[in-house]
Image 1 (cartoon, rainbow, N blue to C red):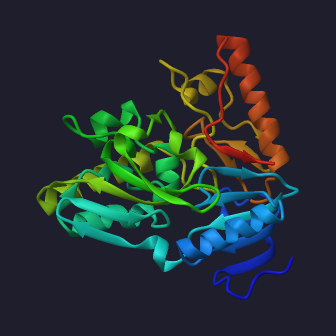
Image 2 (image 1 turned 135 degrees about the vertical axis):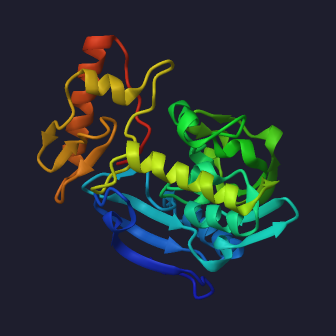
Length: 305
């Protein structure tokens, strides 16, 4: 592949994707590219389209399971300083899609602005959080949040600036975006940035809420080994973790992939787990839950094959 000299971003060939996912599993990307800015992104997208090279977008890789054989085509990561900008404008925050969620939360605390505290501890980027409409479960409400505070990032959105797959940029207002449970209509775009609406609040109270939310995640999530967080979505009216637990699957292990003893909806990489081990474990879990409860679990993670 001959990359144009005016492409400013970095291009790596056969880059192992396990280095870029929290699961630490998966083969290599044919090309791994970090465009420098929207102009660079547009140049790159046109080049990929011309040469019929498929592409995917990765953020912090916190909800992705990559096949052991890797993926064909290009994997793009918006990781340059341009895509990590954060600018406060009154009660609004304009933030780039590449900024880490934890960085976002502590920036809002520093400026005495509240609303994003519940996102702390999510190991992802703003773009990934918007794409998946990241948030906190109902169970966490009594422990972490109080009153009528938001539970998903979509509730904070004023607008989102995106690029289509030709690199054309437009801004979508909140009313034009559909946010659902762990999904959004933004999946057909490349998210560049967002404007979030916050509220003024005492910094000490913001810090207290952040600490409660961090405590909630530490108490309920298994952070002891690499994972992709919750593997399955919660079926309506049920907890996927509870269903898996009731099937007696906590601790179930296939090679180095193991269902967490602490949170049954977490599959851990004990060190040398392969994607095929996780696939087998997911298949087993799905069958057991369907056989016992007549409920079909749907993956929350994205599977790259």
